[in-house]
Length: 140
Length: 232
Image (cartoon, rainbow over all chains, first blue to last red; front, side):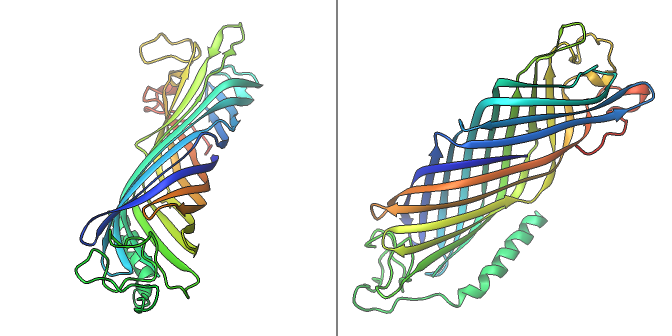
């Protein structure tokens, strides 16, 4: 599970194409942002010959995120107040910083792991998504 | 496709009652009537961000109108790429490097999603807005790569551990759920361009279950761990 907190600044604009058809765009981004990542990876496996029961908690709390998002819309006016849109969005997020790993081992015959906890300097998290679709718009 | 049709239908149902309430600005002082044949819409609404080249400003409203608003409901499909990398080193019981890093990535990660947008214009040239979006949770696949002597690749020599010690592992990423909430203000410094300032919070969660690495599991079971593994 992770949360990202992103203050941003950006530009928006609009333009006119032809009768009843317009476009709108927005670019926003941030040179900093915060990530709160907590991922638990657990192995709770056992068989007649092996036992592997451990939970490892990976955490990353860093304010070194960089983020950029671009979106555009083509808008067709159905009525003066009602429009339908085709939209595109793209988003890139990167963060790195000090992470922590905490291993809780209850039994490990396969990996022979030991309970441990330590920090690392260069944990990384990257996430990006793009999307497209249709929209309905109402102004009043 | 059925989900998308249902989502779009639901949006139409939500917005349909509002269609009849569209306001049209009466001609009067301060509001020029829409010119016939021009790019502006006939019967210019009190709030219409898209007036065409003939419009005077990004937004136009009646002088006695306190607030104007724009709502938008988006439905679509998103493709998500995700990678978490934790390079580290753990030594085994004789001091040899055992694990030297873990990468976790999502594969085949695409979802139906929607975003609702509300923009209000309390004063001329300023817009206050909020957005709320999320996807329809769906299972995906996560690939986990461990490196180090503690794991073996499909071509390396086993180190005495069972076949399932190999990397990468594939997991089922159950119910991948992403949502975001955003708020901000925009200052329209010209008719067509504006400056945005805002804040967004995003959330992503999923549960890893059913690890497998497509090799023979312990005790000659079928590929996969084939042993009980709890929901992580």
